[in-house]
Image 1 (cartoon, helix red, strand yellow):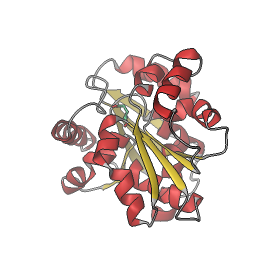
Image 2 (cartoon, rainbow, N blue to C red):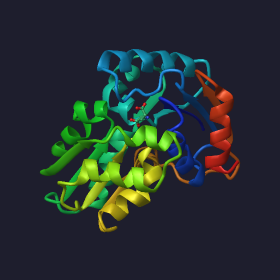
Image 3 (cartoon, protein in one colour):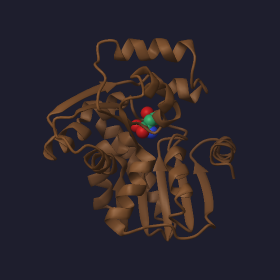
Image 4 (cartoon, helix red, strand yellow):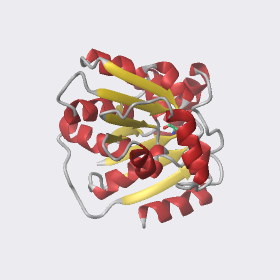
Amino acid sequence: MRVGVFDSGIGGLSVVKSLKEHQLFHEIIYFGDTARVPYGVKDKNTIVRYSLEALEFFKNFDIDLLIVACNTVSAYALDEMKAQADFDIVGVVEAGVLATKNALKNLNSEVLILGTNATIRSQAYKLALKKEGFTNLTSRATGLFVPLVEEGIFSGDILTSTMKHYFWDLKTPDAIILGCTHFPLIEKEISSYFKNTSRMIHSGEAMVEYLHVKYNLTSLSKECDMKFFASENPEALKKIAHKWLAI
Ligand code: DGL
């Protein structure tokens, strides 16, 4: 199976990492819109427009499935993209919701949803979880984590202060949805802030679980051919991909 993975930038590599580790595909075509990242501070019209342009890029490849690794795009543009594609498109929000449902048996469990400003503003996770019967939902836009991760700040004082700034009034939840491609890179620190007692929902792992349930996809092949494209400075993206994915 040849799959496309779309993200606003490099963060979607955290989803590719999970796909690769679980050996789900023979070929992965990755596109990061590095020229226009971040999407998480933009409005719906812009996010939809950029996403439809990215869709055109994937139409040049004979892909079987497109995975939208970007939470912001998944929250805002999935329906519009699906309407213009002749291949299946799945997003990390639906995957994250399924993973949360599978992880928590009690619908009164406290769920903390983290994401970019746009993702939280869309209420995509909140509405989908409510539909599943969850009642105890808190959302928080934690956009500053994105540039910190981009700067390679994965621990230390600046990250601790930023977490205090966002989380000071929160009780320890039962689960935390890392609703942004960048947050898995600081998962350990976020978990440790909440005393390592919350279940962490990671978009990449959630997607693997989702593909298993929806397409019955399990480990296929040890060989996975990966191609990386970016709207700006593809060499930098390739370099990071080789480092993160150890290829
Ligand atoms: N990829 C985005 C997401 O998962 C984070 C970066 C951005 O704001 O574009 O929401």
